[in-house]
Length: 150
Image (cartoon, rainbow, N blue to C red; front, side, top):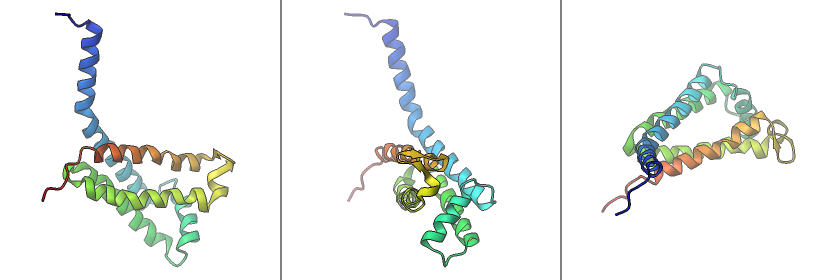
């Protein structure tokens, strides 16, 4: 019988350790990002508030910014809290889907704010594009969801 090298044993240990942490850390990370950023919107300290206001003027000019940012901040905080609940995957991802669509809209509707030139995003554009990581993380969490049973 062949004996495993120490490097293989360490590799196996690290992979098993990563597997035990991956799902809880993913849930916690999404909680932190959504709850924190949502809270900042509510208290008027989010650097994204100006971008949200500009997008609101383009899409829903009849809605007041104060009402919308309160709703949007609470919506983000709810997404974060629901991601902490293991059985809340479907709800959290259902709430995440329209949120991600909304957050990508400035790339199309506000190009002067989100692009400095073709395929060169501004800081705001980079902030939006990084949401691809959030989408990937949500898909990772969804992969652990058990199918409904009849």
